[in-house]
Image (cartoon, rainbow, N blue to C red; front, side, top):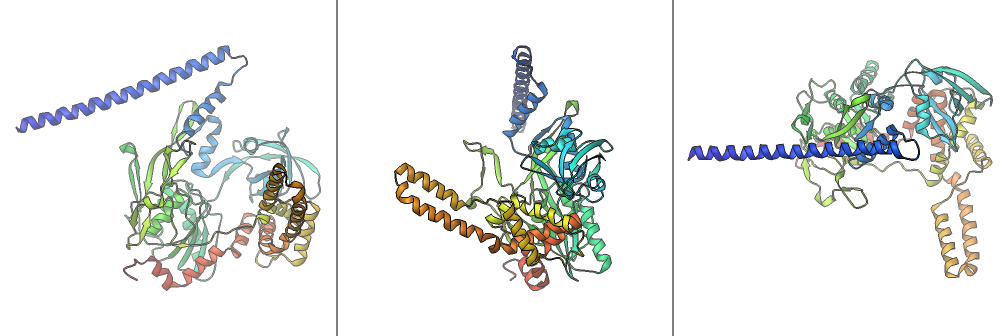
Length: 553
């Protein structure tokens, strides 16, 4: 009887092995067949199509279309785009070290980074780039501009630009350098006991930069609390997220597990050493643009009850990508697994495997979200993102201010300001005076700034519908009066929104004199989320009560 049982087990095992082999063989045949179809199609097009084709471009289009059906994070990089892959992993690229933007088909210098090529060559925010290596820089898309400006470190480009102050055209030789984008662009002490660190990326030096920033501030004076700002941080290397937790969490703590389709993709990541800052109180700030590695850090802090999370619900990216080499120096970044934080939850928001008829990925209904518990027994959910322990109202900008900002009125006024005043004494004492604000109002009026409200769009729709219904003659007077009243209200918007407009003016102007450091420092002063985090850290009883389970309170 025992031998018969073993025989059946062996028979079943052989069946599954044979079935899997046939399935794999069938899949391999399907791939081979379709590759042959694609190759023969390309050959026929090359031979018979009425115009010359571009096989490389067509293949890139075909691959991109194929991958689009999977998820937004599985991407193909031809040899010409390998610099992009290197930047994702290291934060380094060959280029000129400056932000640029396009306004009305004209290319402007945004903000050069101190010490890098554009800065050293004397270009400043507001200068207009006319040509790059003799090629017209106007009427270009940003992707084309990036291709023109980036290149191997040590190579040269000729830049012809219009100086914003003197309006003189100049041509200069600029040597590209290796640009390293900082993961920690700014850090500071907010008071004797609380420090602030802005973490904007997760490339290969992220954890070291966080450690060094804290250690540098501790040299001046010991402090016991930290605000770690992960807002607008889209993530990066998973290993760096674990390394950052290593600074605050004891050794051998599970931070994240990775589970994929094949066994080799499964992995468990734990802290490896004793915490460097074991007793430091931490508040982590997140928003809807905090994703991936940011969510591993925030979610692990939350699951281990090691920090209070504040802000808004995070993005919800729980997918892991790896980069694989292909032939001819091309590469592909493939989603290979999902990650799970210590409580066991995956915070992936969108289900790319089950899309609707329009091709949109679905989300999990609130009622179907599973419950998990933190180490102290607090209830948390796999809510398609990290739900903060303390939810804060998002910084919101009025439509009028958004329009001013989007049409570069604030940027352009700052260019005028810096061309008028040679220097500013310091960041903390600088204010937008009533006189400066009146100058700005005059500047906006002179530029014939146009701002269209949602109400105006509705009035236009009403007017068209009235014409269709034959009521236009009766309603024209009323509609004209509505428009007149609306224009009067719009004229008051620049005064009504003075506080938020003046804040943006202050930040932009300070960025011209003190660059990124000035911009981020100026942004902190009126940041209500940072103020809320600071208040919580100063109230130890409230801070500790948030991290306790409901049973303990």
